[in-house]
Length: 396
Figure 1: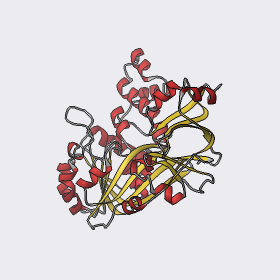
Figure 2: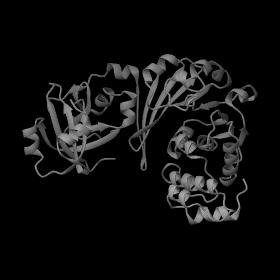
Figure 3: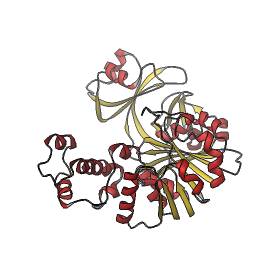
């Protein structure tokens, strides 16, 4: 892609400035392609947290904001790439190419399919910038490219979750392509099909539509669930394997379990809150490992429907946050005033409680923040309690 020196200099000089203000001020130099420059400034700013290696590379170019918002993060893309390796794969929903570039590190050849000419040009440019030379670009829709694609080891697909009016959709049949209709053809072309789906999707409902699923990966980044990955295979599986993954700077928390383990798990219910309170990460909760996570780590559950756990001795590994309990009291106004006297800030959460987190925080008259954590919860005897705690020094 040809970019003149004036536009490049404008991007360099205003890299950290507010894009909206830059747009209002405009640019007096007619040689500057202002819309393109603003797109690059905005993209690079967003990439600092989401795609740090892209932001750090001076020659990388960025797409419009909608493509930046829809693309995978570097962390999730490399997680997916580490799951597979082989001779050839195809990314049938190429977009900005973040996933394709990650898979290019574990496959000899990658096919990138994308109908947008602008995105294809950006991927060509960025592949050269990163010295990636094993990607073949198909500038066409998935439907047009599919018949000419060779058989591959892996197909990766991120169905569009917007309808023809641009509104967000979640259901499998509402996405493009319609995965239940396409899955048989995809599995004819590849023995493994990895599909990225909305983290809002109901996993059990989706499994009913995708009985070819061998694995489900719930992927969180620093505690926030970002992706659901369904691995479809030709080979019939006796049981789906679930992987709850929380990607952290220092590594990954991974909890793997099966439906039979979760169904058969019978956690002990806590008569009271012990020395420590434990909260599973978002990936564990999304995957539905409510009982097996307690049994596996020797924890007591506060209530069948309260997904908080307690113990007097911390387990060595736990996929979530660990708190040291400072105080526990029955929830009513007089108790709250007495036990929280002098406390002005806290991080408040409600778990299986008569009110939500925001309402509880307002009721307790606390501002957000600080080092203290408050959990409104229900015990097995249906008693409503407030647990006051701080993060354990052993927290991951």
